[in-house]
Length: 579
Image (cartoon, rainbow, N blue to C red; front, side, top):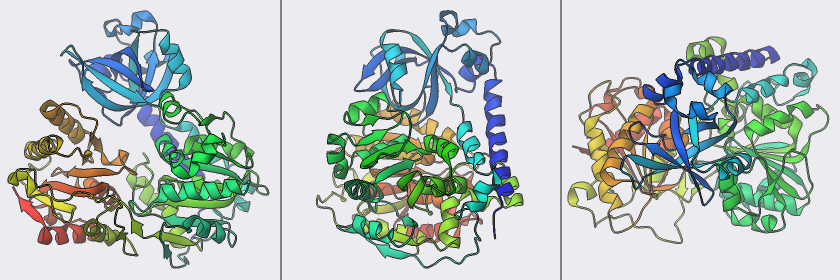
């Protein structure tokens, strides 16, 4: 089939409308309602900066921002810093009154000296806003829902407005009719980057499929180092700033950083602290022998320079490509003479707000799952990485159920401890001596997103791990925000805040590596928690163990995806507990 210019434009228009309507509900809501009832608006006091992180003081009388939550932080005139003066003002009214602002993300919480308050740390603060705050110690700040990426969608639409642009775009204007070629495998070893670069001498576009822990980020850095050595202009883009920073931190790019050849748009205070050699760039333009890093949002603005005859950069590398809409991947035609799309079609897809029924009715699925559409329905070569440096072999065997080619665990040069014999038997029994997954089944009330028994079991396991002999990174996951907040409250009350403890929703942790994962699956909304891509992400973060806590009858769910069912059935038979 072929997706017309009109179909692309209509989908993007529907998505823009859905995002706008959802955000308008927030803007038109009474500010006091969002503060006191919805717990989506926060009032905090500026404390200072600590290692590039913004530190704010919050009252414990209301909830705190969630770890991993992206917020819009802004200052307002002095009278509006007291919420008692808001009256009938809406959230939109407060934003209109703002005097300065920055987007940011919550990364940690801790108790303050005064037990009535907590301190919370944030990253992603823009330098201009940070400089403004430095001269305003003690100022009251407001934090609320962040606006959706409207400009990103509008930019993507622009490539379908002049008809000749779309007509000449051989990536988008083609027949998607399942004539894909079989994928090939290769390992992220010495020579892998050279292999990829050599393949691009044969074609202009390739896809690299990277299952969990297979070294995608390292491979991207190695490829960049080779291309810059050839004096090529290279642009790397990813959905998140965190992903871009992970690339910049790889040893292969150290010489480029030292020679000031790595540039990034919108460098934040914590990024400047982490990589002082990272250079700021305000306008994206090709520079031979230099590497530029920018998010999808920023790169979409290059559509204004789109030309059907001349690509802007020698090479474009898209990381997290599975989270890119087809329209964004289509921009590659105008941006990169040679394009490398790196991602995993078996992990998280783009998050959209368009109604699911509307998507199915109009056949928009292919436009949303862009990388999957190209990989399965075109002749673009696909290469799957097969060696995982994160998972144990037992975990890799389970995760392989989601992939065409089996994943093989590569022995770490630093052996990790899988047998946790310092834990009491009641908890230690949950950890398989070969690492990998465990299924813990218990009674859960149907429809309850705050399952008391599951939260209690999770809290007890976390407490035992936090105070065990070895310091390990622990991640507690759930699909639902409500479940995540309940877990945060219960666990932080039990063990306090620890930097090696993360409690988050699954949608925020793709790319994360941890020692131990606990995935809490309430007896409700299984079509969300057990959606195969999300389930794959949740169960493949850990170097050591993954514990799943679910209802005892979870396998009776009649709409269970076949691959997820195979995973859980195998696990129930091999290593499960009823508690």
